[in-house]
Image: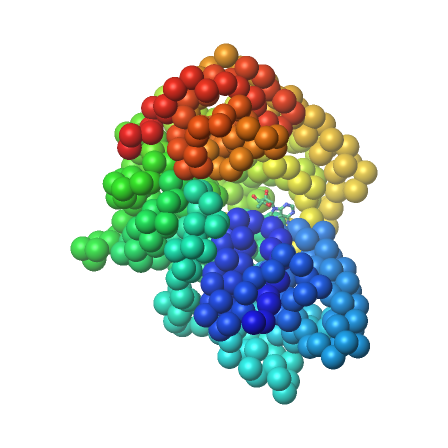
Length: 452
Ligand code: 5AD
Ligand code: SF4
């Protein structure tokens, strides 16, 4: 049996796509391996969101080339595929820069992989045209055993692409226009996942709350409506969704946080900056105060909401005073966890053309200050849960013998001593201690969601 090694970079959608590629190759006779050295087929599923991400791929391809040569010396062939957003953005350039690569395939084309691999016997190939057909219609479902091996929490793509065109972002170019999958197909996949023991679904999309898929009755469904339907799937007790845009948080979606116990009190809602002028140049189409008011409305219906965000520092032209407005917004709103980045000019995006780029030193200083504040908030949030009894979805055995590990509703890793609970159960754990990354606690009873 041939072996395939898939490495994913970047966002959760890439993790999902990597699984779909592995499923498809399984039906072509490939088994998955975690050791690149023994792979007959190496797939790098790449990310183009920031510069470093793309550079990492090229340096990894250097190592892959050595491996390929070494295997060749022993008479073994290795095919190398670059998939994902770097593939989409760089296309042929990858073949030029990385001689080891056989196939370059974009995120909307990977259902063609078997055909592309065949073609690559005679020629190096690039497939990055946006196809008319839906790749999901051509991708086989994994076996039940495979789904089980992936755990009780699963990603499910419901939407792809983005029409927002934030001026710093490559996503609208690499993933293309916004497309929502029909409700019936999402439901099929959810039922299949639940049947294999999945208890938590994270609905994913580049701009997931812009979801507007075709419902079974032919009408257009919003994300709020979809969440209601998925909450009815037997076995599914937790729902999450990511990543959202503030402009697309409609009333129905906010109400779902109030009305559906399965919708977790956690929201990743990137704001990027606290400065109205910067938000405007970023083309975010909202102000800092509009974001503050939106959060107030969501917290009004879900007071326990843990909020997470993305931030960019050193966007072109950002002054010290404008950066301070980001710091103020963070202090005002309060986040339980966040991701923050130095602005990285992406070729082809409008912001990369702005002349007043911010120096590396200033970006580094601002990032350090912002991350310091965000880290203090994260720690404070974690410490705030000490003494509380939280529902924990058990995902795997813990680090030490006799321990179980799972996640709180707020996506915090939780560990506790247990020899009688199984993966997939929801239990109540009283939190006794907050470590730097995990919470620790003791079992106190079944979870409040357990019977769902
Ligand atoms: N530079 C820095 N950060 C970026 N992001 C997107 N594009 C860039 C860029 N050019 C960040 C945003 C986005 C997250 C996924 O990545 O914060 O929300
Ligand atoms: Fe990029 Fe998100 Fe803006 Fe779309 S909404 S352009 S994915 S940052």
